Image 1 (cartoon, rainbow, N blue to C red):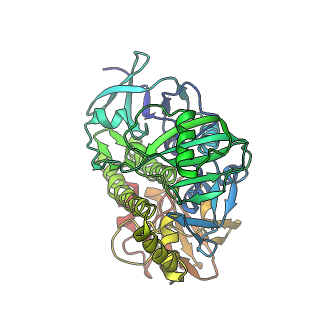
Image 2: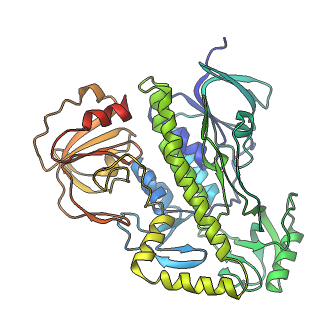
Image 3: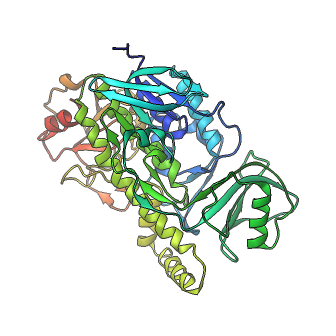
Length: 485
């Protein structure tokens, strides 16, 4: 049997793959990344920003400022182009961040380089076989790598997913769009529009191009798009191409909507677009992928290190599959709202009216921002299964924040108010750190609102609450065993 060359091999160096590599490296796992592109893109990318929950998970690792320093924040989100305020959401990061994907990838690549993770460009996984002890991955350069686990982060046409035999059911496309970063002699009407056909024009700080998106008259063209096709599509929708004369990047996408039937096949797993694709309205794709990585990373690390059994990986599918299914559901609804005609206009008017009301607005805003995620961890305190708020804490060593305590991707047990806590955490001390903390103020959760302050909470490495004290330590051993053994 070949010697195992890496504990984990990641196929794909997009945001999902890079984030997963960082999570695994923080946990001490030997990980490598293969990327079919010969170099990292320095221009052009479909995704254009981050939602509050994604910024939160980056803050949990101490790297959020790297992204905030390069992007532009804005306190408005949108649902099918119907904009709403997110500034009153109960999060430290009550805003979105406009930042093109290639910049996101550059920052993540620099971060994992600091952690010692190699990224091999110009190489991709073309096939694999697996057995009970590992995976033999065939690489495009003709070599074979023996690895413990293989994770496909290789996009919607994922070779890893196809070779694993995982079904990818869903809905065929009903619309096709071109997206590009272009130079124009004229000034287009900024923003998102539907008159004549769906189209939009935006700029990003630090870029000298216009991000244009425009619907095509037909669906089904799979060829590489051209500047002439982009010009023709703009003229058909707008009556002009606004002096379009060059593009640094052009791509085509549709509203095809699909989700992998399983996120795991033995020692092979899927994340990001390899696991789910949808119309990119609302900018949820990159964000869902990064959050897949944060959910999977610590779990896979525990299995690799022998802390947890391989069946522990099934919790990844159980938790993240419903999240992506919800994203697919809301993007299909938004795509329908983008359609033409007076009947759709009437429905949009109704939705606009609803979004002027506080409760519908905050629910939709929390959903679009990724702050309403609730993993089913059973009944109990409203915090259970939800993201832990980033509270300002007083610890014996001084001021801190919850997210600061999560920087090393370890579990955190927080005891509030100096209450007696007769429990020995020693058997789990390699995976969980305990802190005596003080916090004064109301607890507020997105959608739920104000909640009673607990006596103690167990926070998983991904920032979600695994156990809440109800006046005693009852249930804590079971929670620790479930998540950290």
